[in-house]
Length: 586
Image (cartoon, rainbow, N blue to C red; front, side):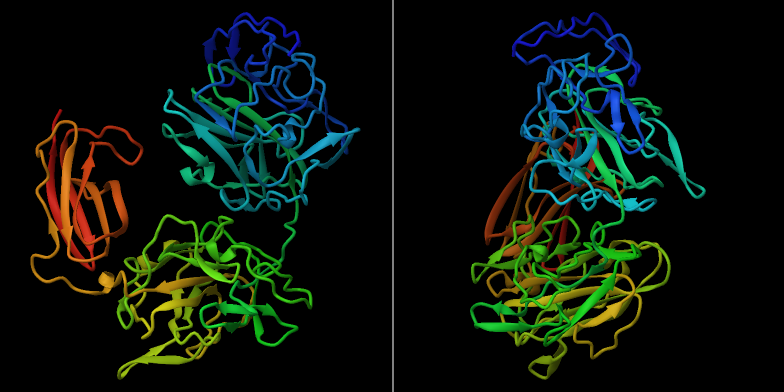
């Protein structure tokens, strides 16, 4: 309000290589578009005295970044609508007003934590932060683990996200540095497509991970979402019709953690309905029950990367203090864990509650067979180096320890259900792709603590869940075995599992699909093309007994209309499959 902006005539989008005529910027409403925040013509790196020459706002006739009609797509909860770049009035740039600290609720950076420049020195942003770094030098930064940003977009137009890091700390973007013989570009993400109406973390869209540059210290980063792509040598400048740019000062340094521990309760309530304490070997190596520890080496992990927690679940494993659960590590809320199915639970206020994930199928029924990929799965990575081994423990008798054995009649049911299963170097998929052996569920219903461990040395068949390993990771989950949705383990009688005739078929716009199941049951329905590639997952969840109907509107997973041709429906439930041929015409 009340700030005078220079009138911009015709701006040339230097980064994207397009011409665009921005609106006049003399409005006093504050809704005059969006600029960047990185230092432009002023100090960017106090320790080295390097001034920032980032294209932000100081030269409207030269290189700068500006989004005119800031609609349709942006970072965080809202658009900044800043008329003054960082802290000064563009183009007379005067840092810093904490825009890079997201103090005005507009920015979307989820992690790591940003810094700012105050009195010619770098300090933490004035918030509840501890100075979390991106990653160490020359290591791979993993989206959803080391870095992430929140994004919101309507269905308006195209949208692309690009990200720059000033790895060599010279005050400009667009260079390429080297880690040994490996080239490391400063443009770490270029033109990641954002589907219409998407809102959520950028990591969900699967951006490629990137290597961090070779210099430790602070670096300026630019996150831009725009309606037009940028060129391969983008330096951060450009004039765009819409979108937003957010700049942050981030830290490249040695990670603050050194080890990974487990999450299962140790010396605390593990099964509320039984009032039973967990004695699982997690992190109290000064205490009673032993512990499990992995030195974080970046070789193997579950999910997107190693959690690297120095404190087990919520307590302080490296200090002689009680173990205070829970911080939702067992709910994979911090983006690191790799559980795909079944649903996971946690303990809150002395009660078992379901984690807020999208997959609600339990494990079951008692004494049923569990198949990898259908009933249980975890995402595993052996990034490089030696062969790795995956082990899975389940506390079937709920006595708070692992390593024993239950039975289903005359059939023994060991708690060590997957023993030293080999994961070859370079593997990076759901574990089911390696065809682990199926196993038998224990005889009881209820909640059971489980431990998934990937490590470089075999542990043997009588393993109880403890150990020290040079690399790898352990993730613990509270899973549920239920009789109520036990159809997952039952067979069907002929004619009970029905996929009805889709109507119409052939179809031009949409078709109605019907099916029938005899009892509450997990069901998966997807559309595939003629080459067997999945086009769209219609659902993958528990459905109640009876008849159901769903409409397919001829779109793919991104909401785009598919081309006319032959497609196939595939309905899966309880190990049974039904297929149907669909013909789409225009």
